[in-house]
Amino acid sequence: MDESTLQGAPKELFTPRLRLEHPRESHAAVVMESVNASLGELRFIAWGQAPFTAERAERFCRRNAERVAAGECLIYFAFDRDTGAFVGNLDLHSFDFEVPRCQIGYVADSRQAGRGLMHEAGAALVQLAFELGVMRVEAWCDARNHRSIQLAERLGMQREGVLRAYERDEQGGFSDQVVLARLHDDIASFYNAFPSLQPD
Image (tube, rainbow, N blue to C red; front, side, top):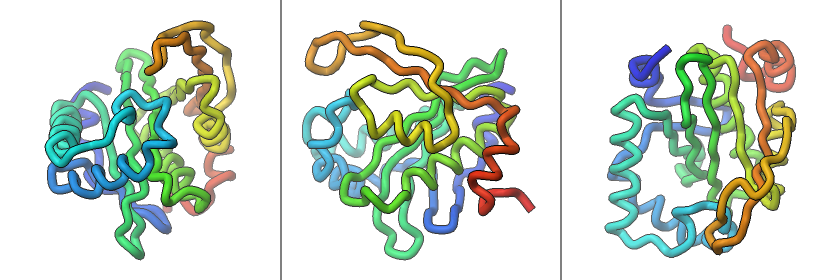
């Protein structure tokens, strides 16, 4: 597994309710609208501390597209298949190709909360990671970000520990990081939890 594996990953993923696609500059308007509507829920997200302008949204989407094209990571923007509404963005990042392992990240549009859509999208990304050959998928969450931790646990990840005062948060204070992970060997129980994602 290497960068070419990520470059060959599907450009689109489909779940029962969602379409996930790689970022592009044409997504800038919906990303800007989503970030600005969700600012109150983005306190743990480095790039979510101030409103997006159209220019910043374009740079954000362009940079994400460049990172995907380089095989640095996988990023998907999720959309409701029925309405076309933007649901959020998810990524697989921090790859160690020698293991191989990676981390999953997810940022939801707060207007779509409570529908289980990010859970559905996250399950699709965990499945994709395992199909590409990843043996370990991790989630690193600020210990105060209970929603993020709960989503990781709903994706079948187990808490492995807390890194105390691991980094500074966006306000300059110390932040503990909760580390959760799921192994490829857990794939059978994964499909038991998400039978609709079982390959034919």
